[in-house]
Amino acid sequence: MNKWGKQVGAVLLAGSLLLGGVLVSDVVQGPQKAYADEVQRNVVSVVGKGELSIKPDIVYLSIAVDTTAATAQEAQKGNAAKISKITALLKDTWKIADKDIQSTQFYVQPNYTYTEKEGQKVKGYNANHTLTVAYRDLAKVGELLDAAATAGANNIGNVRFAVEDPSTLEAQVIEKAMANAGVKAGAIAKAAGRTLGQVLTVSQNDGNTTPVYFEQNAKMMSAADSAAGTAVQPGEVKVSTQLSVMYELK
Image (cartoon, rainbow, N blue to C red; front, side, top):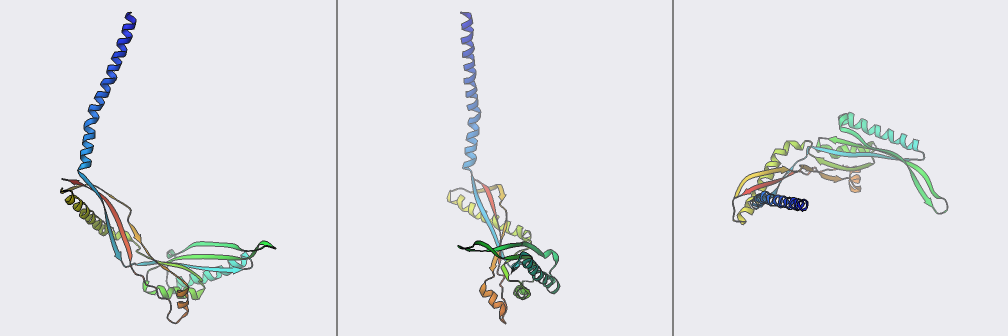
């Protein structure tokens, strides 16, 4: 009898401790939840956007040569001669530094034909060599494209204008983004019958430069053959950033 009494007493004691643990846990967690809810009720979070539209200071040109021949060796050899002539033109005549001329694509591949009678057969080979050229005299971009075409370039993909070092504009776009966040948060606070307090947190999304793309097309190529030559307009590029800002509400 004493043995069973001791066991029951131990169970009741354990139950009391467990219940006590729950009660203690509730007491501890209760104020934390209330505090979190209070904080959430007294903040406002907004995204501020800053953007600058400025004139570009560099252009990236994609200049390529495509050559077709009966054999892979002939295609590659003919292509190499043309790209060598274009590279010499860029360096010697246009004074473009080695670091601003980069080979970004090269391949030699077969061209296939198909007939029901003979099936798939190789009919010649095509070689491609593409250069990406950085150039800073934007007033002469059209002239440079015309000269490259005359030297043998027959595949000009696009012309991309950009800002070479957008980090120099970072402070300006951040200031614009922060001002924009303040206007948004102030309007929200006013609409809610509150006043805006201090900034609690700020985080920045990656800034970016939105380039203006200029596509080389058949009309432009025909213009290059005329006396007028190719005309390229740099336009503007946009440098932007976003800030996530949390403000205190009073």
